[in-house]
Image (cartoon, rainbow, N blue to C red; front, side):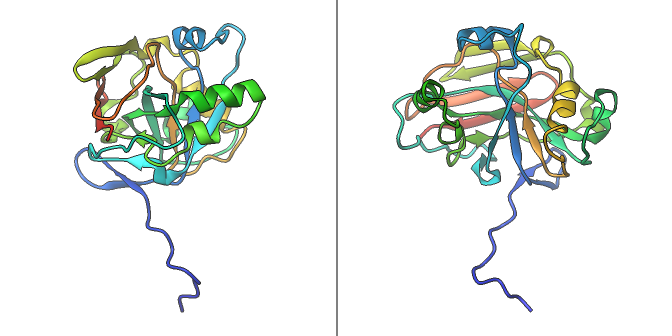
Length: 228
């Protein structure tokens, strides 16, 4: 018998290249995982270990759908990222075993209320409202690792209205994908359906209503959205 006092929310899922849908459990993100971006944000990549924040699963935007410009900000920023889809969970995963836990990879966007993030930093408060707002996680098709392998190098770039804004290489990650999985699994028990946004290269910048974003990661795929 159904004893829910309210209808349960729908399962959030992302489309997979070749067919099927990947159910989303949680979304984790790595902060400042490219040296140049860490420096442009005032960090010191030589000293900072990986740190993490989260987005709700239902912040996902798929299929190239529009992303509304969020309330409570005057400075919405773009961040193009390699996203890892977890197929097998675990705790204290060794970096050498991490690829066995990966289903596949996608291109994603970590949209950020930069002004709210700056205020949170200044007041030593959580980042949640700067990162975890509705429609803040556009995602392209997830490409299974059995088809594309485990990319460790390749161009990662973002155009806004056709103009190149971000242009980096996956080989520039401070902490590799396997190291990120190992580090995160020491804090939480990873589970099937988890996504990990692995950080963005330099060149983040402001967005306005009407902007069209086109992200691409070599060997991985694309992500597109329009800010409305």
